Amino acid sequence: MRMLTTLLLTDPGGRWGHMGYDDSGWAWFWMAIMMTLWLLVIGVAVWAVLRAGAGRGRGSGGGPGSGSGGGPDDGGARASDPDGRTRAREILAERYARGEIDGEEYEERLAKLG
Image 1: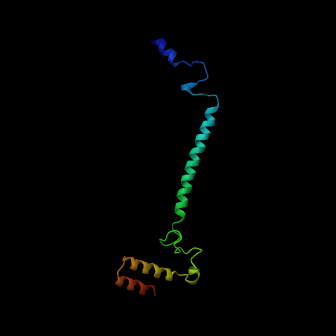
Image 2: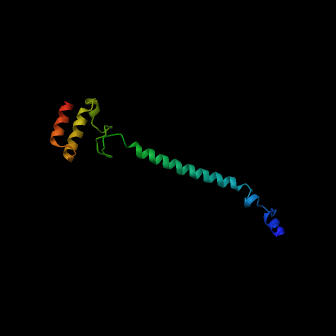
Image 3: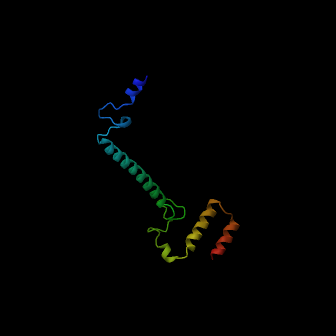
């Protein structure tokens, strides 16, 4: 039994080192490839999350091409209405049209906007 254990635990003397590790130099190459691939996967994931989040906050709810974002295609609404009252009235009218608020609340909020 002791001889069997000794034979199993000794180094066979070939290319294989400790625990079957091939120390011919290729392990570093494959490790570098795998690290690069993982960094690429993580980088793409971060880029996708940032790109998806970049579209939010540009407007008030409207999706791409809705024209309600105050961006370059807003027709200069920000320049003529710096305090945003016109857009606030539009949002209020949209909420009333969708039924989110009733007529009384609509009139009350419209009066507060001035």
